[in-house]
Length: 346
Picture 1: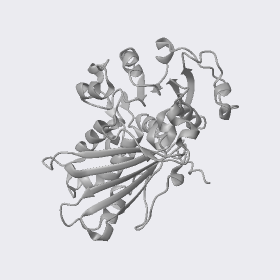
Picture 2: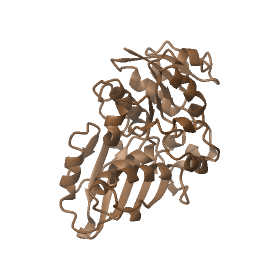
Picture 3: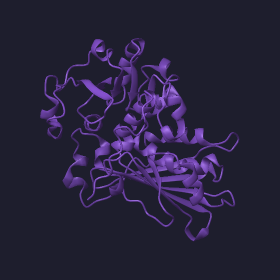
Picture 4: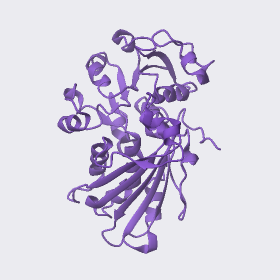
């Protein structure tokens, strides 16, 4: 049984970690931190967890966190950077759900996040935690940067095309729509029910912080000499709580062969990627609260544009579920442990 700490446990990714870890047979949450909610019982803030946890929130204490086998950071950007050197020096392994260590170029990170990176010396050590691409590196990692939700859905959709050099990498398009929980738990007028219900909108069309992360991951999938990644990424807000639907477009270089077979073969041994039968259209409700990504691929009118549809739950495969999948890999467990529950319907 490994001892788990969670830093920043009061947000949506924090409570999702708690929900999933409550029944994990090999992990026990021993400390959970929040400066604002110090002393408040977990079950008081999250009544769905009554009977599962006797913990109360506490202020972050490096000595206490250092006694854990693994610490999850479910914090805004910048928090993990400040605490990471101390934790790493104590031998504690970390899965960071924030954006602090996803981007390998500290200057690019600073450009998109509006301040200098606070711990550039550890960026190279961090392993990008997309298991379907980096499983062999995750297993031995001490610091894993868990991918963002949009990047997860988008990369899983594009990777088979790029790995096989089948499309023009500089002409990729991703239209992706997320539920409101993707914006976090903090109060915001834009996220009020009366503002989001019965409406649909794009946002950050001129540049979203997930863009450099997505392009970095797609670049890693390209064979050497295959060109440069150029992605147009437009996120949208859906009037629902959970889920992401990414509709991805790429232009074929030439004869692509059987794309359905390509995707089925690429993900045949991936426990959390489901390639749907030809002609399918994945639905966000089919992955709600699960760690599954469901993908469908088509080539409309047999022209040179490929359309890939990729759906995930932004809080599970897009955040906390994937973080636990990484934890399982890091400690040599079956990576599906604690994550096999089917999606909720209706």
